[in-house]
Image (cartoon, rainbow, N blue to C red; front, side):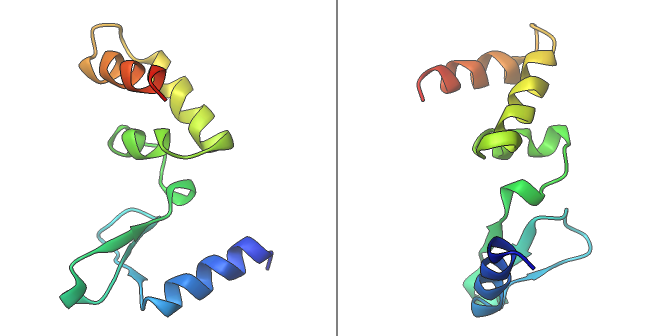
Length: 89
């Protein structure tokens, strides 16, 4: 196990975070009374529903998300809005 995987597991365990079968990979839920979760962006599936979050990633994850964004139709509202926001980063 590499150090990043170890740190992730230690962090998730420390917060008592756990995945739920009905949610995508990369989404971890904290105990019910905290009403929050942890998103591990590089574990998210490559789907249109996760595109916004993957754009916030870094390296290969963000690069792949940008490629997917650019491949969308120019009429797609998500494409133009996301490109405007990325230009401001």
